[in-house]
Length: 239
Image (cartoon, rainbow, N blue to C red; front, side, top):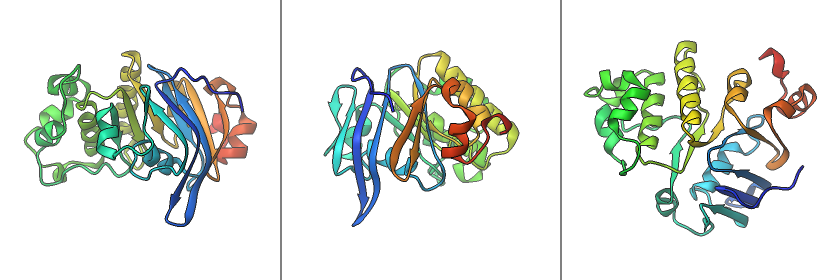
């Protein structure tokens, strides 16, 4: 695996993370430059979500280093890490079911480039459903809401865990179009998703995990069929 550049928005070096006495991450390294979209890839259970939890200090790493926007995240409280500019869209969306769409959007909003009008431009469905409770939305609409809520924190880095899992094809297309737009506007993104056909065209770099370790790093063009089959169990060209 190639050496990682130190001048990064996010730079993770050799982290080890545990759940109690059980070790989940053994040696994970990855990096993201400002304005990059980076894919975190691997089979189920290899440590992708744990890596995200470690970045956000929800399950802190016990060894290694995590630097974000020139700040050391190790030992920082999760809310303090978020305030530095981490915008998380967690797996499962976790919208506030008993709040309206508008209330969800403004619940954690911070002043910056993104406001509700800009979110409505990105996801017109959310404007149409502003006064609906989140619990009444479809899964795809809840994912749009979760992304919109994260963007309204005006993050330096948007983190998408399972960006389109379980969504209808037409909704997936809307989500990917939004991600492509965010990329064109220079938003830094770390994204986990299983649909390589849609994921790879929006990414600048990819990191693959296997058994809690970073085992491969490269551009989408460098992700050969051999690498895809070996570490992802799939043939990239046919997905």
